[in-house]
Length: 71
Image 1 (cartoon, one colour):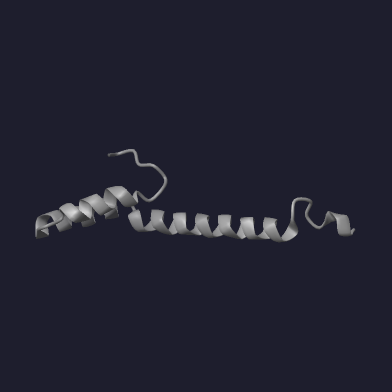
Image 2 (cartoon, one colour):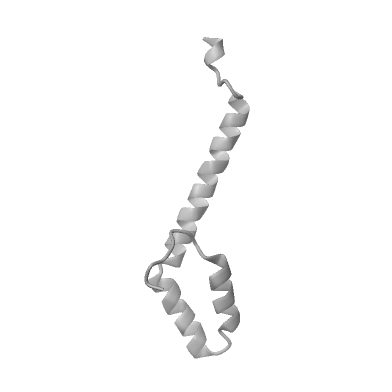
């Protein structure tokens, strides 16, 4: 898998972890995660999720028309 999607692939990493029953498989999993920059992708996805939640909260507080009607 040379071309990776931008997100963190929970399902794939969970399956690889389940298959990592010996030291060799665990080291392979670690190498894959390092090569794919899994930690960076997870952090980026968490940040994007936090931003999306903040935007939704602000939109809900401001309402459909925002605060422009107060001016």
